[in-house]
Length: 239
Image (cartoon, rainbow, N blue to C red; front, top):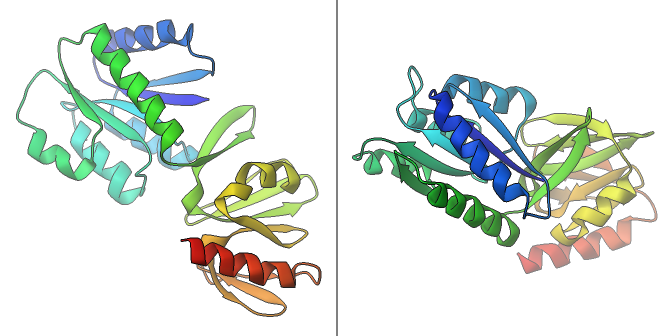
């Protein structure tokens, strides 16, 4: 699933961008989900509250109260999300210096053209496929994404999976074996039958426990201790 947010206080702009995306959806093999917001505060609140990770955001610069550039800085500097591609839209020029800190993927000048919008959508999809990596999971009938680099470990408790990240602890239904098939290539491995850990966040290994970068300690199973050491050294060496 590819997730797009549109943030503009002009409903006609939101409708136009959404229409272009939905027309493109007919030719794109995966599902594209589009959410619309009329203020920067609403967008940032939703990202914080529900751990939303959009692949692409079309952001109006001239939003009231919290403008688009300020909202972009919240996403980058406060929420620490550098994965989402941001395209600013405006009827005026002269914002390029302020945009630098937000690291936008592009800028579109109003009035918008359908071809320009589509070009940004296609580019963002190509960049997502080739560059940054995310883990996708289902919670309460909705699909969500989490940046791989921010996941410390997964813990299984019966059919419930607890995903511990640098900022949150998120629970959803699943199995560690299903998750392992998705994240093994990112150097995740079992330290215990109930724990799947991210090699990049291991701080210390001891015979019966490992310490993660958040200083939590996790148990090491008897069957896992030898392979754990080998995989840890291999992963660090590759980085």
